[in-house]
Image (tube, rainbow, N blue to C red):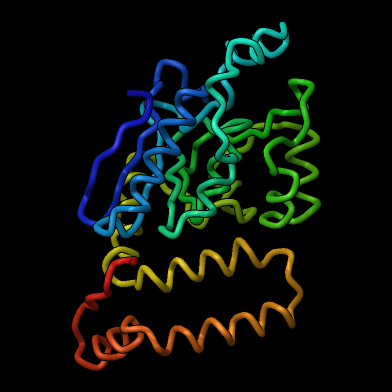
Length: 260
């Protein structure tokens, strides 16, 4: 299987599994990955998702066989029936939080797939690069929109124009990841973080917060404030609110209901 799936408590762990190619992206991998994300999002027992890569890479970008086929004009002919209508930004539309554990090489399209996750944890020595300008390409799949919002325009310009390699530690310092840790601890820390979401946080609250953040980047402050007031009034009427307050007062772990 090009993407593996396993459960650890309320956490679904998805592993990109082409280690001999540093998990370079293919149409087959994309379909399998998105299918598994969709399956996890429908499963009420799954409260958080962790995405990582097998071997030494997270995702080294588009597979060069596909790039070569595109250059020769063969890709469009050969892949007509393989195209997936779900966009690269598909993880942002899920209700379940998605945590990227960037364990190694993260290049081009791999950077996009990391940054459309909700939270990124990276190995401090992982090698990141946008790479597009060095392949005669542009900031694809929305990265020209996402990167300035995460790292600021100056840093986004640097990373996209130069296509230079930078480390996970630098990615964290720029705001692309919330934590940079030694590689041998990466998956354990990412899963521990996801388990905290799974056991301590309301699935409904997290789903609404995801929608507020990913959907609010184009909204003005006044619009975002008014929308937050409406959503807060809704949250007061949910059982999640009663359970969150009760568990705090009774000093016990919360028992939030699953997503409907």
